[in-house]
Amino acid sequence: MLKLFKKRYGQTGRNITKRMTEKVRNCVSVGEMQAKLLQKIEELTLHVIEQGKELRQLKDENEMLKRQLATLDEEEKKLLDSVENDEWISNYETSEQFDIRKAVLTKSAREALNTEKETRILIHIPQNVFHKIEKLAEKSGVHYQNWITETLQKAVSQ
Image (cartoon, rainbow, N blue to C red):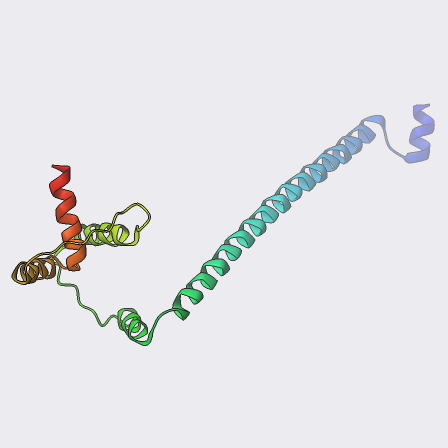
């Protein structure tokens, strides 16, 4: 039979075995390559989906900022433009001083905007006391109402 095979194909069994082994290896390599390509396609698809989510978030944020900008009056728009054009100079010597001040002002702003949990009161004080409070508040860099609120909160929390 081997003689017939040799006659027909001109090769020995060992040569056939080698050629078949090489073909099987190539088939495995093609399969591995296809698996790697599928994995890369999946990774790229997930990346595109993630990019789409980020794009949607940025578009939503952009729309929100446009709506907020539309509510600004002319004076507020001029102020915003001056800030964006770096026309303001910091009077803080270190970034730590700035961060501390920022935290105080942020807290004051949050408290001023938090109208749901606060109770409004009416206080009658002499005008000279009011002017002193205004000066102290100005020195602290906050509105006098916020200064009064902060001072009362500190007194109560002690």
